[in-house]
Figure 1 (tube, one colour):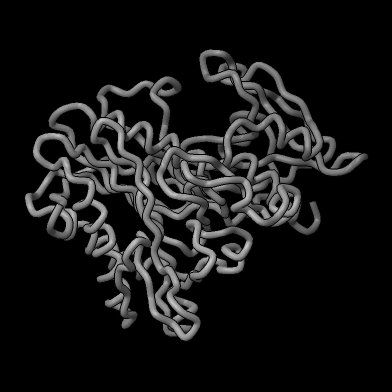
Figure 2: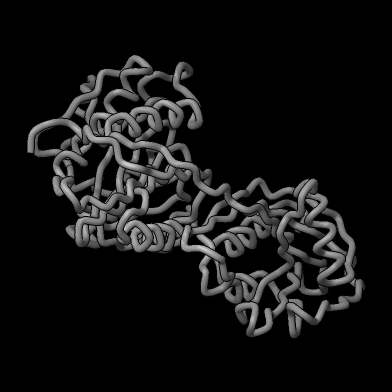
Length: 375
């Protein structure tokens, strides 16, 4: 159990995303864990940013969250129980989450080395920005001595099944630290939480700058031999709505059984040479015969593409990044449904649309439209 990280290089594919909704992140990890469990397949390093969420490890209790479900709903924070170790922690924008999904069989059956390698990568990243961080006996993660006492800068929580690792680390660049005050973070009542922003103020790096450094150190500390990986495909969603007599109404279309049989608004894959805006207008016209006023929603998110929904010629997991727009159409505009993909449509209020939406990104888009002025 000596040593820090691994020393023998191992083939690894790097998957670096932006925003990934937490349930989509769980599906992503499960798919990649199944993939790497087969012999001679590369490990996976996934780096991303989650939406605001409290995650409960195997040792967490409901008492670890100090506020009500209704309060969290008003703040846009969800709660999910997971199979990782530890208690409760927070993920959110401004925090780097890294999932090393590794097959440790075949001579690397040493989870201690993996843990110490992950901690060392975070320590080196903090040091790159002038922050001295270290380990604290009996308290996994990395810690910084502050005038308020020891505060956690980076958390760690792993799950190991048949020597396949999932979950990983969370490194605080500039998350909303107030959210940590609503929980007992990682079970500690006598220690705080910090971030590069809380320690460095205006001198703190951006998420991208810190991620660049952490990525380098993870690759070195875990002896990852990077292999080529397929780039995510790209799509758009155009949440199509109109002004109805009782308020805003969202267009919902039911996908045919061979296309998944779920309700959605307008979506589509980007074609070569298109901008996201061009794709949104084209898909609206092709799927509904409508034109409208397009507005960006400031939301882009990535997810694993289930091969049960879309078939692929090989086993390598596929991912997609979706850019979200809203599209207002005239109240009296007539829908001309393209019948090969959708079987029926309806206009419904925001609550019903949110309930009918299947995927996290679509639900988030409804919530954003609800909050936008003029809708």
